[in-house]
Image 1 (cartoon, rainbow, N blue to C red):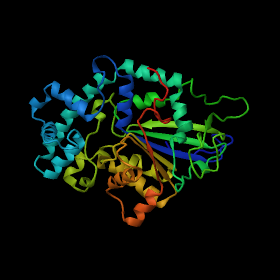
Image 2 (cartoon, one colour; image 1 turned 90 degrees about the vertical axis):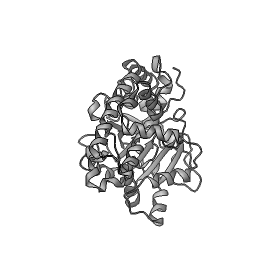
Image 3 (cartoon, rainbow, N blue to C red; image 1 turned 60 degrees about the horizontal axis):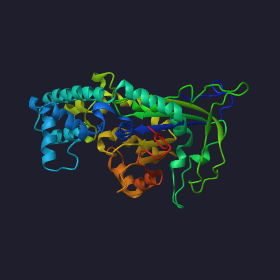
Image 4 (cartoon, rainbow, N blue to C red; image 1 turned 180 degrees about the vertical axis):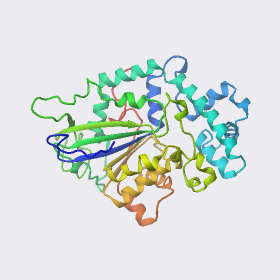
Amino acid sequence: MFVEYDKSDYLDLRKQHNIMVLVGNGFDIAALRKFGSGKMQGKTTSYCDFFDYITYYRFHNIGNVIYEKMEKDREENKENWADFENSISEIIRDSIIPTNKLEKDINNLTDCFARYLNDLVTADLLIEINNCSRSNRLASRSMSTFLADLKLAKEEKINFPDNTDHYDLYNYLFVNFNYTQLLDNYIYLDKTQFVPHPYRTVDRNFDFYPNPKDNITNCKHNQDRVWSSYLLADVIHPNGKQSIPRSIIFGIEDDFNKAAKEIRLVKSFWGQNDVKYKRLFDKTELFIIYGMSLSKTDSWWFNRIYNTLLYSNAELIIYYYDYYFDSEEVKERFLDACVGCERDYNNDEIVKSRIFIIKTDNDNNNFLGFRDIQV
């Protein structure tokens, strides 16, 4: 992941930029809408589609308390009725179900979700996305020109582009919160898109564009600037993978993790997040959040981003799908999802000044999008 590299690894290395990208269900939904076919065409990894799936297979007959709560909330027109991790949190808050019963029902739900993903994300679909990424150079485009998506107001200033130059290493860590490998296929650097050592006399292997469309105000680089650079990329699945059903983690996060009796239901506990990932945040220069709902169920990650923004020069770009929210509201949604931080007005203002919002439809953006792609 964020190993510190030097000139024994890259001959002309000037500086290393660690970029942590958190990718949520919005990416999988966009990919399935673009490439889905067969009997599951039109279905995605959304909670609503999964609820329809388990209802069709008469999941409600087995007395699963999470399903029963979702069904009741839907009848009452609750906004988040289909978010089963939110349902788990509310069940715990009501304190009416023994933990061992809730764990058993979560396991049943997990098994059914694994079957759903296997019906939805087939080998044929993965191959189609694999070929599309290769032929359209989607992975390299995402990592070299993502700053083309950023349009800033005159009073906004992002420092990351100005800190880049020739001979820099762009070290990406994609934190895939999805259980599928749709993102892994999209972002994989195959032989068409990336050659580790393309030249005889120099070892640079990547072109990075600090201001590809001149959209970034107050940037000292223009659209003609391109850096001769280095690239590394890796993907992790902190919540498990479709291919290993028992690795899939459903659960809670927020303030429930203070209660010992509920620790068995906390995602970051089972994912060993403190041991595996906590040390990465201080090493990160730029965070990118893509396709996430900014809910408290991922507060372990958001808390640490908040603190990193507060106590360092790191910055955060959020791609957000809902056009009903303006940039300030999106920032507030992020802050509201940070439940373990020393928040006050001054700290919040510092953090917000280091957050930049990109409104996206998950299609036309350069970064992880499907722009100009014909299926």
